[in-house]
Amino acid sequence: MNSLMLGKNSYYQRNREKILEQKRMYYANNVDKILTQRQEYYQSNTDKCKKKATKWRREHPEYRHEYHVAHKERQNILSHQYRLNHRKETKKMSREWRQNHIEGVKKYRLQYYQAHKIEALAECKAYRKIPIESMCESCGGTDGLERHHSVYSKPLIVTTLCRSCHKKVHVQKGNT
Ligand SMILES: [Zn+2]
Ligand SMILES: [Zn+2]
Image (cartoon, rainbow, N blue to C red; front, side, top):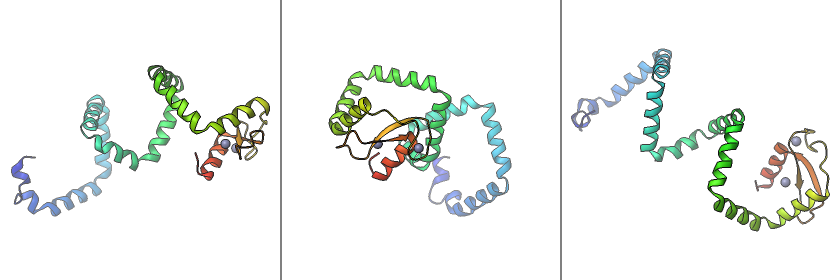
């Protein structure tokens, strides 16, 4: 649109509401057609569309965060699925990332260790001395079993929980 069309007294501005309403009506009446057309266009111009979207995202970094907030759950599910379907690639990528960021990883580990010293020591002690049970004490599951300390000051008192029950316990406790 050129500046003439967007001027204060332009046709568009004077009839803005009307035009928008017409557009909305048209969209509502033809939603199936429009979506099919868009899909067809996307399928025959996938590369072009993808490039355009990438370019747009690069030029509008401020929307990235908003988009993420608005689609958080969907994105989480999608990225989880992606990781499940691309296990090898994901592992390789994160290994490469760690290799390229060795100092950062070391620093992070050290910081984490210092901030969670008691927990880390308790986990270490329990790992050496307490054999893990064969099933989750909360749901009976047998996959991804972990030791959980309800009190870290008593390192030898542990509960065996599966990963998802363990997560839930810590969410309830308020420290993930
Ligand atoms: Zn469980
Ligand atoms: Zn725990």
